[in-house]
Image (cartoon, rainbow, N blue to C red; front, top):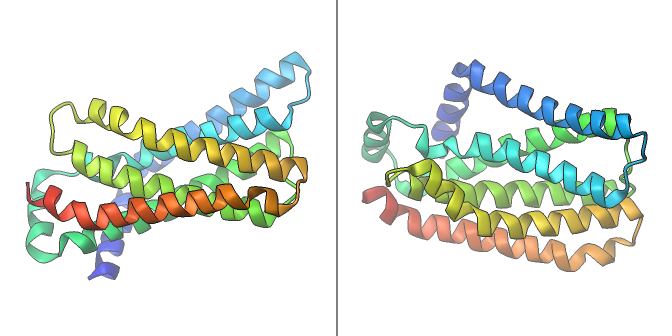
Length: 218
């Protein structure tokens, strides 16, 4: 059933070609604006600025895509899924799919930043681990929050308010680790933050698995 739900998510996403192209255009536009800003000022971008701009670009792109997990679904689809699948399978499928989508956006953003703003990363293994853990953290927390917000009025506003405290903590750790790998520090300097990201992911996935059935039935 989990594989079937993943195929459903992929099929629905491929049908919404305008949404996919819109997210791609959004990601490209943000990166190009960053490039123009530093190109016109004729200044070299420092590691902290590169890291902050990269993760803010990824964050906005991911939020625009993952936030639609439950908010954008029609009520009829929710009723149908309720009758054929368990809520645990539904939320895990959402998290896995959104993690894959977030990873694609993250690597696409990295390629665009490398093309326009240079490639300052020195420790690619730690950086790749950061992309993976951050994508999972964004996806698990935003998927659960999207499920909560979809049950209320003004769901988009509620989504923004609930997601900010969780997302900002993940974002700050990702920026710090990225600065470390750009500065060429030993990987051990980032171990604590990587473990914190892993712990946040474990907590958010566990909460989503345990709490989503109650949200789904409401």
